[in-house]
Image 1 (cartoon, rainbow, N blue to C red):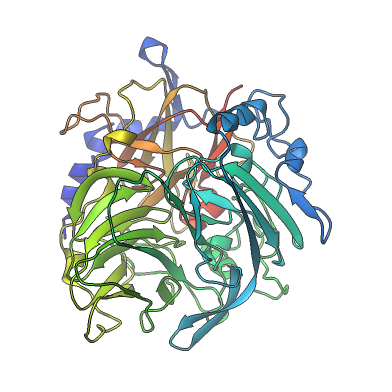
Image 2 (tube, rainbow, N blue to C red):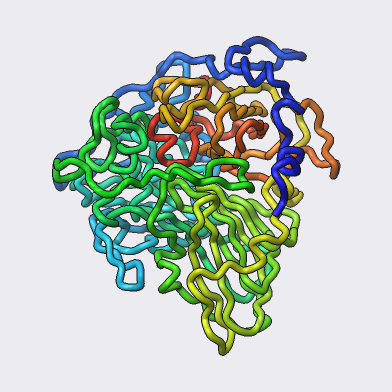
Length: 577
């Protein structure tokens, strides 16, 4: 395993890039950059165009995404910012075209789930499955999905990594009305690009239940050659174990101060009101053992591994003592699409006895690179290709800093399955991270100086549990302005002792490197590293990314640790009209 100094050197510590003074004062900087370009601190706030949603229809009724847009949380076309239902959004969607219609029905409801080895839990799930059934479409399709909410709480549905039209992004009180119990909501949009994605709620800490599923967008012109495909979904699990729920975990972590984020959608199973302990669906006090992770540390992350001590870690909904098995033949080329759907856990992944060739990250192709292991923060995805050996091999996902693993098996012949606790040597072999990957030329951003730079300090600590950007807890009316057509640089300065996976809705970005970098040149002559939508920012370090402002609307930017975002580490980028 590589040492912390090496990782800091690769990522670029703040001291070596922007300087400690910039880290201390980045949120206060505001002004005009050279050549008329804009450099702005995170304290810059626009005038809100957000209105108030009326919520879902009465019991048994139907609320449709298109029909609801007249009263959408983003407001009508008035105001300084593009609204989720505005003509700019409609025009951008029209440019994407309209392909074959794919109709899908989905039900979110309480479910009793079997995790293997005799373990069953009561949770919430899509169509009673864990993970939810894989949704597979083709790029250019028009997806029309109706979500029926049979939960005892409001919910929503976010298409993680898919750059959909803004009013279909699934953020309550920002891009849509919450979906009330016993109501339906219709999502309809053109599927804009191929890749490995997933979907989950953007309401409270619901994602840390069983409400998630993979979304695979096929490319009819896919250049990658392989014989079989294996979709691998990683998760950390607490819901329904000894009385625990994600809400009780949040309550313990925050002292009852959860519910600051994810659309301010309060209520049973969603958020509790700020300053008050959350209540479960039956109104009884939340129960269960302590889930506080006290002694976690990951050298790979240079950080506390996470806040939550989960009782189980899963691959495709199964515990290590009863792993799912993928069958193939020796010599076959297998494409693994790996998704980290966890709430609070980074996973280090390796396939025993095999090298992996990285082909994509967050859905976008990269120049093929061989590795022994991968590191996935929450929300990240990797596609790899392996040439299958002969035998039974462990696919192990190590929960970073938590001394536990998830397990699945690749079986190509006879042999005894390894023990549930197996840790293949590849876990400690070569580990290639996203910042070391180069984009495939087909998706590389053009060389262009940024028109606007927005800087964000990541703040908070485990003791106060006050995670935020620039000490400001999420406010759905806050706006960090951008304009259509701009190249926008985002710079993140992590002033905390914790690592954070930062996710941007509605866009992919090119990883530039340490924040404060002013030149295009890299060691390989490229302008950017890989294209992504979620990226890890380690403690006491910085990261710069850039994106094209080509998808108008109001877009969430947040930490994908579900508990960090829920107490406030979220904000909004808003396109000016």
